[in-house]
Image (cartoon, rainbow, N blue to C red; front, side, top):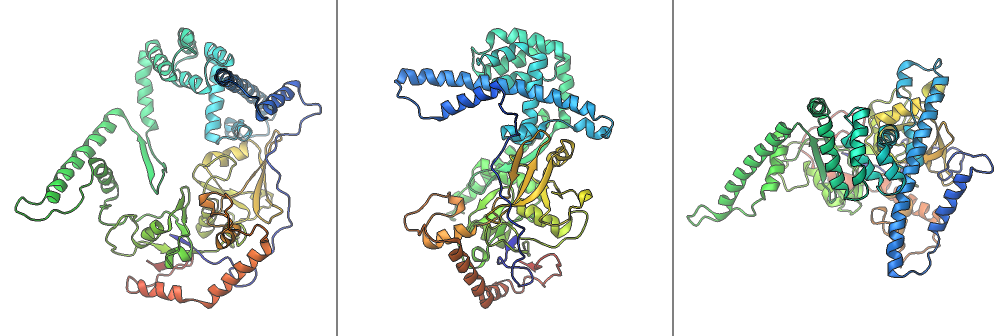
Length: 549
């Protein structure tokens, strides 16, 4: 677990001066010749028309407008697919022109993934899917493409056809596409997908078995956030193994449920029961955790590092400031305290020490993590963990994938320093695409003093990326003290009792007063030490506080 310290310089002196403010511009596309192409002018005119106030309509007219807007949306998506193919093909020509300058491995990967991602404001993973869909429609699914251009099918419906025909040869895919033509736009998306799958199987029965054998190599287990302090764990497994796993969990859960039911009802001799009985579904989940980790989640915490960030108030003083788990989001203070105490969000026994506290310093203005020292070529150890905790997710605009690599913003070979300010967390794909697509990145400072990374693409797009606040910002704290608005995790709607004229200078003064109070008052840390006294000797940890909890 990581815990926030107070937002002051690490040496106790004033915070280091910031770089000269550089205005951070809004999202921007490439600069175009004047006048702009006629098609672009018309697209902008239609967008402005639809964004303006609508005229009064009857109910029948509203329904008709909905239908036409849906068709227009599909036509626009088809036009995007056509432009994507043109962009990809021209990029291939550009690559060929530079063939002698680039290494073979680099040319294999080079493409337009990030160009499309930034232009459409979607994740790079989604961008790759859209590029693949556009190419398949253009190269081997002419009937689906025609229906798409006419607005009779949606982008999602077209993607279902592409998915079901992906393993076929181009000739087989065109045959299936032709047989599907009468169905396009006349049935539900689910029925269209089932029809496409059936035709694809008939077109290549042997290939279906071969694709299944290859699909075994794509097995995986993944995790993603869910609501209310939960996560969703999912896996892709071969049919037999997946069914066997679920059946084994089911049998164990039903046996445990029967035993728990008997215990709850008493032994038949008047002995009292033992409380609420977990459901079979709950016991299946517990059995999965028990088999994988070797820990009974109903009785003890799980020893795992989740990088929980929380304030001293939330940890020690029963404060309600929420913690934050990287890649997940806000965690209620009460749950965070339970995790810190026992490694679990359930009422379990606390055995040996499982939690570590590491003190990190936050910027007092924007509540992002402050600078740490680092003079190495690679981002390792405390410096790497710091950047991961600050950025929380891939720093490429519109990508929210987990961080796998920490890389230089300004490249090391161009003189970029190995520091937190010049580091950024990226997923593996974005880190590779950043180089192969010749993106140029630089650290800039906005007029309000916050740090951002400016991204310039090969074809002229300019975007900016900033890490989300780790905890409350200065404005959030001031607003909570004076009733102006709720904190960031509840949205930014203005309240009734605030003082809208309160300036940043007053908020800074109040923050400095809190820092002074912190320096004068160490009672909370003394109480914390007393509570955990005897659980273990203090360990040597040059990366953090080294206090076993």
